[in-house]
Image 1 (cartoon, one colour):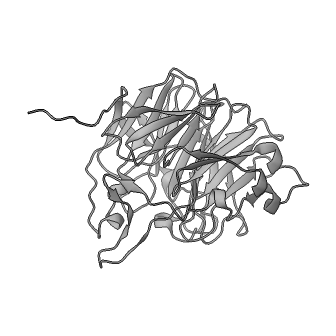
Image 2 (cartoon, rainbow, N blue to C red; image 1 turned 135 degrees about the vertical axis):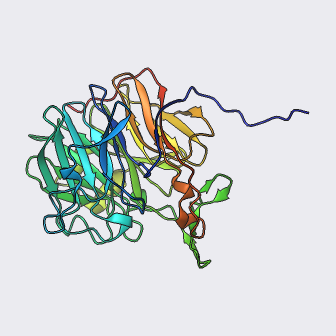
Image 3 (tube, rainbow, N blue to C red; image 1 turned 180 degrees about the vertical axis):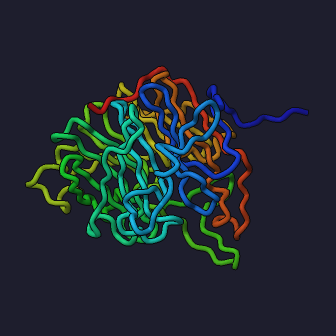
Length: 362
């Protein structure tokens, strides 16, 4: 006897299998180079940033850059959460400086610009204690090279114990500031109950104690013209946006800025997001093993639904017009299952053809 089953769809292609540490970030450069990062979340991380070269994981930009020196925290990578190739010759590397979501090491939390032609670090940006708090976890980053003399970077603070926020960094001066600090759009949705693989996702310790799993602002994307910044808390199904001109309007203070935030409604629960050249936003749907497209008119659809998509993390669009993302089984980590690690190696880098180029940033 045959039975009806769930309908899966979308042509998913496996690009790389990871048999060791768990990846989070992926970014594909304008020349098709593929970069991956591995945060320090308890696995034996040999290099926190790598490039996939002929199927091998090569420390990037060098093995030395992946060696953290406590006496010089700004010089080596400690725990990289996100990487973004800007399409204009630079790979931006976001180091949390906070292994296992601990308090960030002073000077360890940083944004590093690497020249993709020379494979050399060209600048490192660090943050003051007023911007990177003891509760801060730097999560994802987007750059816009058109604003100001050298551009700006927008970074999410996906704190699990303090206020969520967006961090704005002037790439010329190195000055940074927090916006929408602790507001509804960057905070955990108190009514959100995540359900993944048929069960509620929550912290479950080996001693039997439990607590809600709550992570603030995480996914971030920018419109092709740089005028709209989109973002979402990890513990939420809502998509929010703010017009970027308002962020730099000196007549609007941060308390007033919240009134200008747009709530696009539910898009599904997402980790990473990315924007295509036509303004379409692509977002993971970690509760439903899928990837969703959010169009400029606000309509949405699922473009791929596949049981292999076990927690779609960071997304990147390559010059080949494929959408790339890691499926890293985040929901199977030991902290959610009474100390038992349920992840099954390998983790995978997948791609799906979307027929669209990435949005430009300059």
